[in-house]
Image 1 (cartoon, rainbow, N blue to C red):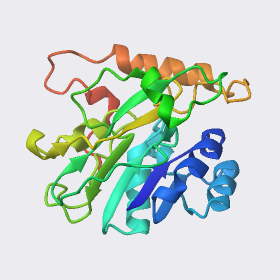
Image 2 (image 1 turned 180 degrees about the horizontal axis):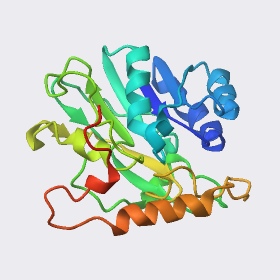
Image 3 (image 1 turned 180 degrees about the vertical axis):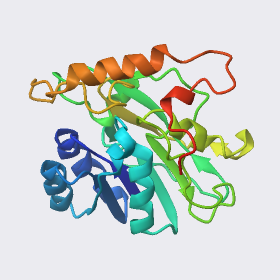
Length: 245
């Protein structure tokens, strides 16, 4: 299996997750911005391929993760078993045997470890952490699939018109009918709070310092969330660019 993940301003998490997860994957690509030299250094230290792009900010986007990810997939090669994952996710050190079938999407459930002032628990203790309540989506923190899966369609596989990093993974997982979406027999651990960094990093670095633009990014994220119109034909329309591909 090959992994690809987006990490901009998340190098401190990569220092934890890459040495923990790297052995699990034959290859890993880290997609980042040209200015994020810290992420590039950590990725190369753990023998990861690095793809740099400024597509995150094209057309004034806050953080178009999906356009950058799709450029990374083009460069990485769309073949074999792939895992699209996040830089703040830990997989268990050892996995139970489970088969994979082309045509299915696999996403494990995730548990939450939010108090990052405490030591990160070993995987044998993850059952003590809260299980994320969303059981209806096979979300983008760890999505496993085969590149030749007919459900994917032609590239780009993700919607690349989002102004931020939320949403497109939810639409991506809808490509598969529920009968083809499988929970593998293991869980992963998510470090930190969820849904806080869609417009760029807002949460403090692990040393306690706060990103320079954190408050600005929080306001932008709150605007997107508060502007969603429940029951509208496309409640996310203001979060996307129109007529954009």
